[in-house]
Structures are given as structure tokens and as C-alpha cells.
Amino acid sequence: MSELSNIKRLLINMHCSRCRSEYDENSIKIMRSEKGLLVFQVKCEKCKRCFGMALLGMDSNELEKALDMDEKKPEINAEPINYDDVLDAHHFFQNLDENWSKYIN
Image (cartoon, rainbow, N blue to C red):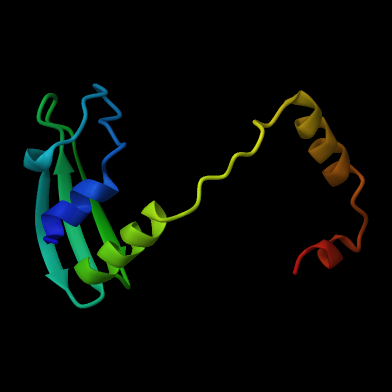
């Protein structure tokens, strides 16, 4: 798959933060691509807002592998977080003592 195709897959659910337009292939310009580095610019075709993005430690092939793995993740049928879940988490953190680090592995 081409670098441009991989970047499009990465940005598939993203949109311009200013005008909310979706990005398309005309929005993406690859600035630099080498082993372990992929730099590209995204420009909104509607309002012309630009931003740059750099993927360090990842070239186009590694990006493709990561996207493939992400798409193969099993779907989790978990219940949405509700008010009681948030309250339970709040109480948990509120009641941690000085030995809180034992909960982290």
C-alpha cells in the first residue's frame, strides 16, 4: 500500500478542528519519508487550515502494520461507563494511601 493510502487510513475519522470538514487525499502532502520517520502536512481544502504531523520511529511500512493490527482488534462488547462507575473510581482514588504504588504493575 502507498504512503498516501496509509496516511489516509490514519486520518479516516479525523476532520478539521476549525470548520469540521473531512480530510481527503488532496489534504495530505508527504514532506519527508525515510526509515523510522514519516512527516506529512494536512491542509483543510475548505478553510485552508494546516497542521503537520511527524511519526518518529515509524516509517510507512510500520504504519501499515500498525493500522492492520488495529483493524484486526476484536470488538469489545462492554457496557458503557455509567454514573456509578465514575463514582466508584472517584472513591477508589480518594481513598488511596501512601502505598498507592502497589496498585501499579
